[in-house]
Each structure stands twice: as C-alpha cells, then as structure tokens.
Length: 411
Image 1 (cartoon, rainbow, N blue to C red):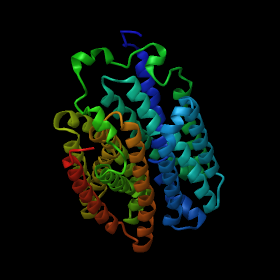
Image 2 (cartoon, one colour):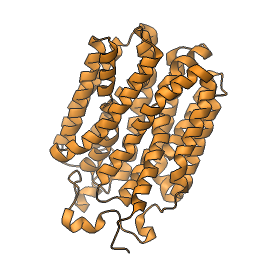
Image 3 (cartoon, one colour):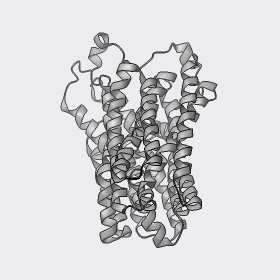
Image 4 (cartoon, rainbow, N blue to C red):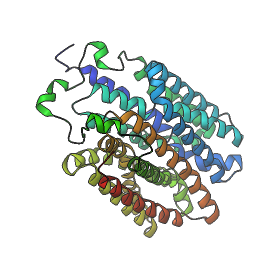
C-alpha cells in the first residue's frame, strides 16, 4: 500500500464524477422544464398530463435507487454506469421520435431507471472511497455540476427548440448525455483506491487531522441498533420527501414566466439563474457546515429559499424575478449536499449506504409527485400563486421535522 497518495489521478476521478452528475442529474432533471410548453402544445395535452412523464421518470429513479447498493455489490461499477448511461441516452433520443403521450410515459420510466444507475449513489460512493481529506469539498463540487449543466444548457436547449424544433433538440440532449458520461466509463480506475495499492486522498493525515467536522462516530452497538423503521429515520424520511417537493417548481419557471406575460427567453434565464443559485449554495452550505454545523446551515438555505418564494409572490419585474430565481436555487443545496451530510451525521458512516439509498428514494418520490401536482394545479387555477403558498408551508414543516430529528438522541 502506498504511503503517499498525492497525485493527479484523484482529481481526474473527481472531474469524471462532476461530468457524470452533469449528465445524470443536470440534463435529465434540471433542463427538462424547457420542453414542457412546446411538447405539451405539440401533443395537444395539458401541462399536467405531459409533466406526468417526469413523475414516472423520478419514481423509476426512486425505486431503482433502493436496489443500487445491492447491484453495486454484484456488478462491476463501470458496467452498471454504462448500462445506466445507455438507457438514459436511448430513451432521451427516442423522445424525439415520440408523438404519443403514452410513449413519453414509458420512455420516462426507462430514463429514470438509467439515471439512478449512473447518478448520485455511484458518484458519492466513489468520492467516499477515494477522498478522505476534502471529502466534503469533493462531494459538493461533484453535485454542483448538476447545476452547472442546468444553468449552461437550459438556454441552449430553449434556443434549439425555437430554431430546430423539440424533436431534434431531444437528439442533441441524448448525444450530450452520453458524451458527458464517457470519461467516467473510459478512464481507468477501480472502485476503491486500495484495489490499486493506493490510500484514499489524505488518509495518511488521519492521526493529525482527525475526523471531518461533519462526521460523527457511533459505537458498534449503536450502529447495530439502526433500522429504517425507527422513528428518527422515519421522520428524516419525511424531511427528504418534503424538501425535495419544493424544487419541482424550478422546472415550471419557463411556464411561470409565460403565464405572467413575459417571454420564454426570460423563463429560460430564470431557470439558469436557479441553477447558478444551485451551484453557489452548494459551495456555501459546505463552508457554513464547517462553521456552524450542518443543521443550522440547512436552516439558512431554507430561509433563503423562503425569501425567494415571497419575492415570486409579491413582485413581477424582470430583475426581481431573476433575483428570486437565483435565491430559489438555495433549496438544491439542502436536497443534495445537506441530506447527504445529515444522513451520515444522524445515522453513522457504517449505515450510510442503506440509509442514504432510502433517503434517495424519498427524495425522488417527493420530487416526482411535486412536478405533476404543480402542473395540474396550474391547469386548474391558471396561476402559480397557490403553489408558492404550498411551498412555503412545506418548508415550514421541514424545519419542524428537522428540529425533532436533531433532538432525538438515539439511532
């Protein structure tokens, strides 16, 4: 085993992880909203009916995520990632050929399965294995790229839809998806650095640096007490559902802009602003968690998101809408980085794989239904005002539940 673990390979692996989250989350989830209006109009269906395919996609991701830890034990990681990338790319390409809503539902399910196989779980697993020191930075950076992809590609896809049509734009999306996933698949590295005779990055400094500030060590007896039916985990499960329902509004921002008299260009800029907020807040929550703890950091991000919701409700100018959209992106830091760190803090490192796979299910479950429910509420009320109120109520419930979890001392 090498005592020295410095070297460029660790950072190349991290870059591969960044590109893969850009593909599996940034494209599949964060740019999907630009297709809602043009495709639903072309198919002659309502927003709610079309966005149901996104619900099926996220539900498929949620259910598949439960099995990913088991699949990773039995299947070579890169093979699983390849299968996931191919399923996502093929289903996205086929959406450009689909002119029937039922086909979109089926393709949405396939897309969701693929996204789970090469999404958050394999990325965070690789980072946890390869990075001991700067693990939080590596995790935040990798997950930030889902926002980078959303911010950069949303206006690109909007312009492509207007110039070449939504069908050909789906083809472009598919090609970009597989290209972004290829570095992770092709670059030679093992699942664990020990398999290459290496130590995780920074491991030799364990005795000097100690444990990361965000990580808590439980005794072996405490670790064994954990199960997903315990009250503490069940309440945290609800937190994951609640908080992941709120970002469902972001994919509707292009439609929201149109509904209050603005152009689709402003709508795509709002979506990009949200993704920029996504990126910035993920870095910020990592810094704050080292300073004030992860739960207080999460409360800070939720408060910023609530300010954004109030701005959406009270002001209808281009500048305030863009500011609100930027602030709204803070919620993504809670859904990604916040939940991942809190899972480790509340339930221990040894339980992370089982606990986080279930939290991933809850996250996708909450997001899946939110996207469609928001679409139907808009169809029935022709307004997003009620939706913003509901989002505020959900964030308040999240704060209450998190306070309860934090004050429960046992696993």
